[in-house]
Amino acid sequence: MSSPHRAAPAARREVVLGVLGGSGLYAIDGLESIHQVELDTPFGKPSGPYTTGQLSRQERAPIKVVFVPRHGPGHTLLPGEVNYRANMHGFKQLGVTHVLSVSAVGSLREAIVPGHVVVPDQLIDRTKGREHTFFGDGLVAHIQFGDPFCPLMRARILEAAAAEGAKVHNGGALVVMEGPAFSTRAESELYRSFGADIIGMTALPEAKLAREAELGYAILALATDYDCWRVGEEEVSVDGVIAVLKRNVSLARAIVGRLAAALPETTAELPYPRALEHALITHPDAISAAARERLDLLIGHLL
Image (cartoon, rainbow, N blue to C red):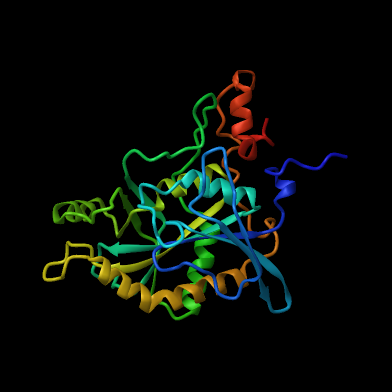
């Protein structure tokens, strides 16, 4: 009997946690059996080598964890230079089923104080010119994206953050700007008028690609500043952002560790999104051999 395709549900029964480190988070505490893995993908090179390992859990089987720094070792990549497609494809190659994105964000609301944690539930895209899909060049797919984050992962991140004593905000809209410059005051006020609560530079196309790769994706957002909308507040600066991040990096690591410890062992208990089952529109006979090969890890089990 042949083994299932590696993207098929039968091959993805074990929960494997992928962690995308943002500004300030460049390692995971407590990892054992560590290996550094260099990967190539059909979409180019990821941000850097992946760190794979496992975290021990009391009276439970260890959980596999895969970590990559979004901006590369030493933080060398602008938000617009990150190869988001390669990063997600690499996670899929390494068996990841769920992804925690750790991100620094600016606050657009008085109540979200620098140092607070936000677990957003919506996105507004203001990026430009980024590769935002795995598809095209011979295969068309349209995923559902009305709710861009995995609700099961969001709930567990909220629980972990609260258990670690964080001041955590449940929900909110994250507007994703192109950067690398911070907002003008007019832009900041415009985003507030949209109903956005926080602002960052990396959640898109990351979240869209995670959905296309059928990875359960959610964000742990660390508020570092008030952007530039708040009257009497100093404008956001790298020094200010880093200062807040340094104060909160131990909290972020603790939340990651608690989340990993609480995740179930199987995807039957924590399903990942089956986003592609009804998303492919190209007739199978019209899909080129090159497109099939390029996208095999994502859609090979459906063809």
